[in-house]
Image (cartoon, rainbow, N blue to C red):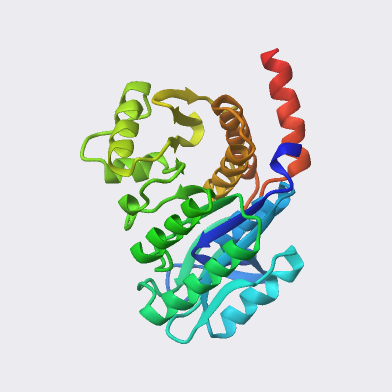
Length: 324
């Protein structure tokens, strides 16, 4: 765990506010056959790529969050949440041409009943791209960055131009690049160190069926590496764990059974842990163990939450004791 700490990681991608409206349900509306939620609380959390930053911070390293938010009330609200999480806004750009993404989840009697998304998903324009890349160059030049994480939510920040230029800058400085992709620019992330889709994303992108079996996952990994020239492929398999291919040797690593409350944000945690493990020079087996435990841990809590370092340490000790 100590090897995961003390590192500087640049996180590039889509940020958002995860808003939770919670309350109780005791009746059905007379206006339509829908439940009436009597609201008792509202909570805003940092989401999207900002949740990756929270995970990096929770593991004792320094995140530099780079994204674009709207010059709107929600953008100011997003910035206002950063100090409480001990995150800086030095990598953020504000735009007059897009709104800040907000995902509002309505929960009644501890169950999610509805989600409402307010967002723009068009690509950054040329001026936004120029400002955004200027910020990233400045941070890469001035900070001891060891890794760049691309966290894509298909909201328009990670355009092909941004992906290619940031990858080029990182490679120029010998900085690791890892990716948690989405479908739109799935094949734009070329020559990265670690590419981490989930099973659904690889199924949606490969021209052949992919199932959670070693031979099928080997085929999917070979297909990805032929197109992307990525060094390592990690495919998360939900409750079945993850698949990891290092130096053309693939293996499925099972995870421990969990009482799942919410899978939201698990991918953010996995890419965070895997990136820090890679930066620390850990082998694939240790990377897989840490990623599985951390990703599974956050699924036991409702809503989008970062990893708990103390709990992760305890789970690692228990896992090592079992294997020994």
